[in-house]
Amino acid sequence: MKELMYSPAVPVSGGFVWLVGAGPGAADLITLRGKEALENAEVVVHDDLSGDELLRYCPAECEFVFVGKRAGRHSATQEEINRLLVSHAADGKRVVRLKGGDPSVFGRLGEELAALRQAGLPHAVIPGVTAACAAAAAAGVSLTRRGVASAAVLATGHECTGKSGPELDWEALAQPNATLCVYMGTKSLGLLAGRLMRHGHSPDLPVLMVSNASLPGQVVRSGTLETAAALATEAVGSPSLVLIGEIAAHNLAWLALGQHQQSLAHA
Ligand code: SAH
Image (tube, rainbow, N blue to C red):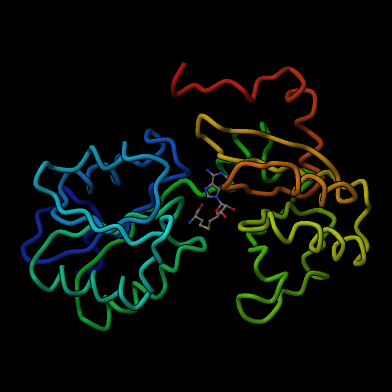
């Protein structure tokens, strides 16, 4: 029953951990529920955020624990993060674990949930806008589209280099009617494009690279599988999300209008 307490507004006695998706970067793209969790937090365990804006929602006496990477300093290990969450919640604190995008998408949510469950601590997940959705919005495309893309696949480019376990079956992923959303794929984009072409994709298949989606430095670049490697080596901003598939061709006229430069949030 404890895990069914979703809302931060529900009074909780004793420790509780909310695993909150911060969204892609812009402070106004967190959910209302996520913001409410920050407003009620006693401890916030957070990664690298694009700014401190979100942390301003927290009470003045809130404790911040930074566990991301910063120049000259190693990020905390996953085990250290798990221990932090468990120990603060066991001390009776209201803890927010704030993660970029959605916590369940390449966010190591599974390990943190397992640690909290093993310790018998109550917790809830608050979803966030994942980078693929923010990138699609920035580029003016729909991830799925009737008759064009019947599936959208979230994949990590790390798999392409074998860095994170067994390699994905890229042949199976090279579906004609799907959009491939590649996280952490900038470095391996040339390799990945080569594999997709070997598995039957056309060299003309459209590719979009969206950097800093939702942030002031947002840039959308377009190319094809054939030119993808060059797209990745141009001075692209970080982080970047790659969208591969026919849907990417549907934004070209819109991009030409320069609409993607507009930022509703800060207009
Ligand atoms: N949990 C996050 C993903 C973490 S993996 C989510 O749901 O979005 C980190 C990768 O996400 C980055 O390497 C990049 O590929 C992508 N990413 C995160 N924020 C982004 C942004 N604002 N613009 C483009 N890509 C982004």
